[in-house]
Image (cartoon, rainbow, N blue to C red; front, top):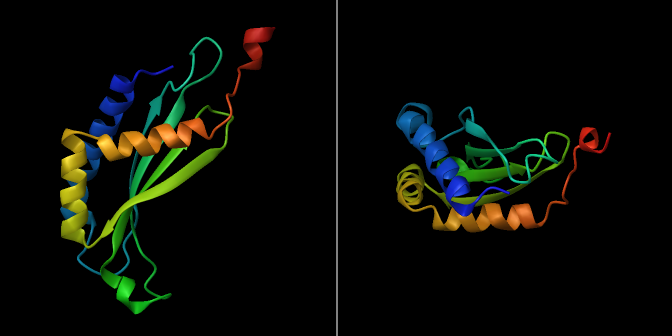
Length: 135
């Protein structure tokens, strides 16, 4: 299983990718194309499971539901524990563009909250095994 250090490093790398494109891709208000980054991570024993995927996505709240949502942005966190497994997700850091950027920059340096979210998502996923390991 990946160590906390490996998961923490993956989160920091993904946040670096998001922040590199953040100002150009995320407007102050209105809808925009999701800003998505993902990375393969061996969440389980590599001898019995393939690598999973950790994905972070900056998204806009749906302003058609409530016009006040036009300036709200958030981070979606998705974890797929293995190539054949399902995906679980959560959200974090809801706020306007500047507030979200500040949260992402803080987490890039020390991903405390995102580590907790990823660990919770991993705990909720069943262990997937590689059938080729049993042949």
